[in-house]
Length: 178
Image (spheres, rainbow, N blue to C red):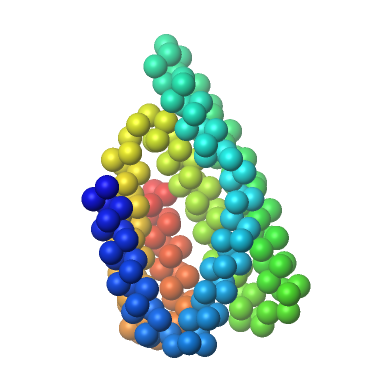
């Protein structure tokens, strides 16, 4: 609960900084890039996270539970990576076909790399949740937010705009997945 509160406070404060620094036009483009990703993100999971948590929680106390959990993790990870690749192509194509500028299509494509990182993070998070290791998942979310805010703040300071924020987000996801 404390980690979720910390995440919300960091997100709120940093969102104000982003809006002030980017201005209306660039912030609107940044929000549109995020909206493209969010619109299609469900396709990269399709319920695999929920399935993993349920199955691992059910199996964890059985004699061969750890081995079976490893099989589930591997299978779900492979499926999520494939779904993420397909979703990356779809979201980038949607941005291009909707007549967005090349700069915007590039930002959408760059942002969609996060789906691959989330495939790894999501499979790991579901496995940890199945083993009731919410302390690790909560800690990872706090670390993500700190990395994103730290690197995002630097990106804004040196004038990288919303591309810098996308890179900071990808770095945060990568650290959280690790």
